[in-house]
Structure formats: C-alpha cells, structure tokens
Image (cartoon, rainbow, N blue to C red; front, side, top):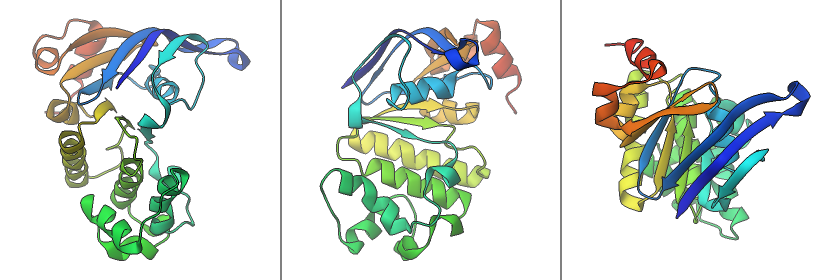
Length: 233
C-alpha cells in the first residue's frame, strides 16, 4: 500500500491559529524505511499522529491509512495501560480484529521481540523501559492488516544496548513482513542503520529529502547541517 500526504497541514485554532506543520507532501510505501528528523518542535510528532489518523488534518488531504497504518508511541509508560497485564495488552488488537490467541501463542509473540513468555502475567507498570517498548512493538505488530509502521522516537530513554536491540528487531520485521517504516527520531546513528531515505523537517516543513548515504555525506540545508554537527562521534 501507499500512504500519501498532499499539501497537508495542521492548525490549532484554540492556540491562536498555531500551525503545527504544513504545507507538507510526502509518500510512504510498503517495504521502505524513511527517517523523519528535525529539532524538537518542528512538527514531526503531530505529523505522525495525522498520518495514523489520530488527529484530523486542517489542510490538504491524506490518501490511504486505516488499520494498515499503526503508530508506536515514544512514551510507552503512558501508551500502555498501567494496570493491564502483558497478556491483556497483546490480546487487545487481536480482539478488535475479531481474533483470539492462546497464552502459548501470546508467549510466542513475546519471544519474537526478545522477551520471555513468563512476563505475560506482569502488569505493564512493573516492566523496564526497554521491556515496555518491546511489548508495545509486539502489540503493534499483532495488527493483522499492518502495512506501515510509524515509530515516534522509539529509542528515546533506552540505554545503547537496548536501543540497538530494538532497532535490530524493527529491521528484522521490516524484512520479514515487508512493512514500511517511518522512523521519527533524534538518533542519527539509528537513522544510519535503518533508513534508506532521510527527510529533514524544520518549522513545520520538509526542507530536505535525500538518500541516507547522500544525506550524511552531502547535506545541504542549514537545518540538516546543524543536526549533523550536533551528532555525537
């Protein structure tokens, strides 16, 4: 499938017509990994919520979408119901799709994201940050119709080993299932590892789009160069 934004924008009238982003046009396809980078406040997360259908556009149009597009939130402690068990969290998207799985099948889903099936009975608020992110990823991947996965700062707050492990899992699932990825992140090392194309967002607009290798070697826009100069060696 293809997800396309055409001259899209988001304004908040209650904030004195604050423009979160726009106009923006972009295309996301199955099997591709695109990174969306930019400073905080550039409009990246609001754009992701509009792509996922969680917020309506106020300008332009969105073509494609539905349950085939899922958003993995940055803040997994609030994204997961705190008192739900891991089993309840994993079963929710299956229930919404009119399906069910045995505890053994749910345990296999956990093991696919590098967690032990013994966590099924644990409440979400007893898990570490890395465990919560993997549970959130497993729940998202359980959506049968999934074709495009939007990841909003998926590595934020994780130690380097946990972040690298989660990045490897995401890449493995992309290859195995052919899903498309939009990676929204400040972690340019993760971008180098995963993304084929890099889009730079500044002040609510896409100011540069390049193949990943070209972005890291020949970025042109000042916003792009500022991000690269701030990158840790």
